[in-house]
Length: 337
Image (cartoon, rainbow, N blue to C red; front, side, top):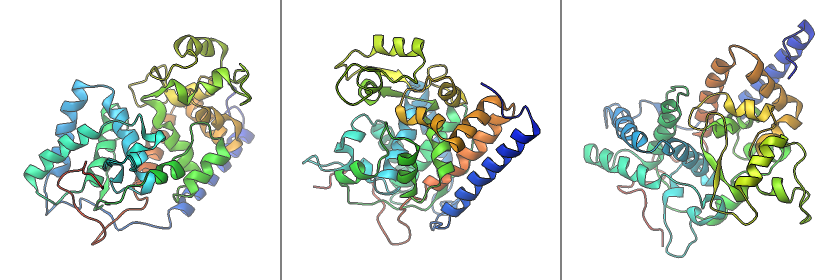
């Protein structure tokens, strides 16, 4: 791929691109939730160390869990705000976790195990929503991603609706315009969308989430393949995901699926992005410029880590409940009906 850093004119253009993305981020951060760092310093001292210690043991036993917990936090925040309502259960199948986009979400039991340890130390003080945010942060850091401070002070919601997940979670086949709209609905910027998409540098996706790119790209039922896919990569995917295969998974970042790094952006640049929504970043000039920066600049990993930390904090502010709004649950997975 040609580097944007090979001429002074291209460098100037890239500076303009990054400045535009930064302005978009600042514009989207106008609503700051009533959260703060070290919220539990006096009410539950050391709780973040306790959460991290419990998670480290769980991660050591299951290397796929960090990606699951990062996704759990994302789906909770986008579904109805970062209030742990994704963890709620329904006897009638009407809760957020019952929606199709959440059918493969995992990590519920890990959060419950951590919550039990926290409750033993500080009963009815620390919310499930804050534990989710801490867990996502620790998952990123455990997989060699950035370490960043998490704002806390969230309270838990007690209403969970399947339709919220169906309405607000971004689609796996969305283009940049569609994705930007979904993120904007959560008061997140264009840059947040480009940066948070790289959470796919760890984890896997089930075949149905990307098989239309292999067998029905036109949407007309014909056996057509996404022409943007690298041919060798597409051949491997079709061998692993035959039509009708719903259980098999493929890594979102085939090179380093368990390491939080720039492998995601390299996969996108090499036309080896698994999901259509990830491949779409190349189709837009601004997101494409960020992908190019992440794959051509020697210091790009530091830029990415700093950007990702900021965007995770922004996401953690979506629809939070604070003060007297919401509750502190003793158990995260309770039934709402």
